[in-house]
Picture 1: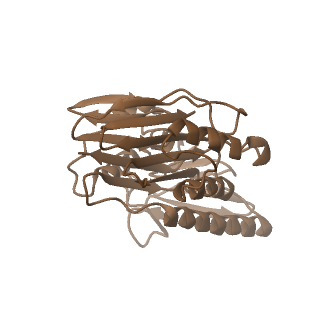
Picture 2 (picture 1 turned 135 degrees about the horizontal axis):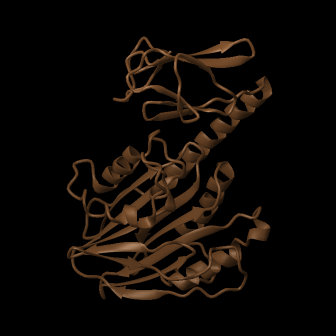
Length: 323
């Protein structure tokens, strides 16, 4: 039984779901779904049913704004799925444990939001100060999903966290990306590659040096104006012996830098429209005064646009406030 409240076996707190909405039952070797007179209807593969209907394996069942898909697994497949789920949960916990605490004191402040998807992507990010007082911030996004992508991201993040890149000035974004490209070629890492954005801010000069590798720009909000901060370079691991172009920008007073993965905007909303980068950037700055924090508010806003409420990719967002 699926409904909005107990005693339904599957409770969906959704305003478009009736109290007792529909019943799904095993019938012989198949599965049927029966609408229980719901207000908004029960849909199989986009078609509203009248009474009962077969629910084939792989079919999509829509109840209110939620979508469910029927799968059939053998005992072995079920165990493999459960084992994989535990591996993914462990990998997600590992990534989360390595993320830096937000900076809540001092002239430079940060807040962030990391929400791994059910499949777990390869997002990772970090920030901190160099010995000379400059501030660095970065985000990487490994292509693909699962524990393998996450652990590849962890390997990269550990080198950056420990400032352990060989013969590389950690304050030189172009040199950092070039070194990562040498250390993580696709051929030596199961054909995995990643995009990256890396920046270093000098409070003494108010200059931000930055470089991106196959990654969309970060965005700077100051004085009500929003502008892109990025460079064009190939993704990390794809092309050997590449130089990575960096750039520099002056930072206005009271500026905010927004750095994020593509999981924050690559969604399909309630009207089946696929979002683009501009859909997300239009939200920047609109939730700055939210009591829960701007990063958490942006996650809440994006998730509300997804019919199932579940994101297909990791949601990673870092906000840096510059005095």
